[in-house]
Image (cartoon, rainbow, N blue to C red):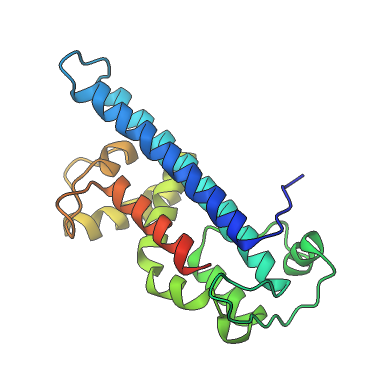
Amino acid sequence: MPQIRRKVSAVANDFRAELGRLERFDSENQSRFSGSSRTLSKPQLWFLTEAVFFRAFRAYDGFIRDIFLLYCLEKRPLSGFPVKSFLKPRNFLHAERLLQSTRPFLDWANPDMVIERAETYLADGFPIKLPYSSNRETLSDMRYVRNHIAHESKESLSAYVRVLIRHYGTVPLTTPSPGEFLLEIDAADPNKYKLQVFFDVMRRLSFDLT
């Protein structure tokens, strides 16, 4: 049974705390790889980096689900601005059932679907639509990397390669593993690698969405 949340602030705080734990774990892995007494090989570091990102994305998936359902209940964001929902659910789980309707499940990883859901069920899409629209490409990249870690299918590889093309400007001669890619220096911020940039986006959204 999914955990039932009551407050927008609690959802955001729990998510940011989980991000902090994962960032510390990533930092420890970096130290174990680059320290004078190295205890991790490159493949091991790549594997652990994939695991850290996968766990972070799963936490983000739960975060957006929870706050969206709270907004369907017209809970206010921390700004205090009112939220108008076109649904009239009785409670948290009823809101999820109304959103799901006849679908087998609700996809919270696809930013286009989240934006469409916000436009359909929340007046002016507030407060979900604008932050999501502003970060659509990065959120899509995160989703494609996550999918390729999870599935390694022909379809997930095709989407993952599109992420690589946006990063490198061309198809790389050798396709890096997701873990290797997540440790690539970001073109827009040479002081950070991709995983850190993705962490920054998730943390920023945890504020912008609440």
